[in-house]
Length: 421
Image (cartoon, rainbow, N blue to C red; front, side):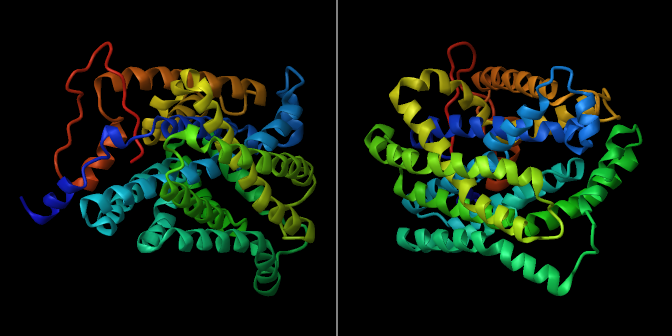
């Protein structure tokens, strides 16, 4: 056995006894929110003018539903998913320390493979987050040898930077790249998405590449990249403290987090709903700076309220219902990418061509139906297979040695084991 194989053997996937089902279920919950936030983009609803959106509102509920989405979903679930990524990093770090394995090399390979998968996915859909997670995730390797206090301090610094980020962006834009009065880059962004409604594959791919570039600039402009790093670090801190284990012993802490974060999240996001509806994104005005700085506080607060509330429900008997989300969370990579493939097939002109035909309520119903079906199929799949298809590819490419795909005793009664790696 060569050195790489030996390292891979030492770094086998996290054993069943090390796994926490609540993390898989919470990851599934995050995937639900992410899909509901993305499906209006797949359907074309998010790129429509208010007049066109109103034309599709057959039930008269789309406008209030959009406000509810803004309040409950927008940015909260990618933030939650980022938090879980950081927890997974800490779990693997702990496992590596026990086994004396080369963590930096392993995690670097893991991120490199994720980056490749993300780039392929991004070539199909500009909204990909996998490549962003992979690139930002390399920063976590630096913290591998840090103690808990150092990680907490780093997380605090990044969150403060995120709050101040809009001020920095506004200063830089006006100093070095002033926009013409009345300009709105969103118009160009939305115009590019029109290509997805046609049947020209080459035009759709070309538009997607341009949108990918604009999306990358937006990640920097609105501080989303900084937010992701901050949540990575907070997740790593939670993982180091092992708060996901023995939830009953930490109920008091979860209650305090919920009571502290929920009011901040609710009040802050109520304000954000109004501000987002009345504040132009370009150029960065004072109102935009205030909105973005408030978002840097209100969104993480709501995210932690969701996580703490979920943990409390799980520990108080709610796991019987919530564990239905665990299989789809265990197959998070496959679930996420398959949502894109389903969205393209249903809505793009190269597929069924439903783009621009459904209102927000109808699109939401479609999204919920798809997710329920994914939960059922994921549970069935994991009765016979140890990993989702893309999870197996990710592990196989990372470890560099054969990894069993089929369960030793599949079939009825074989239940999926949750994972955190």
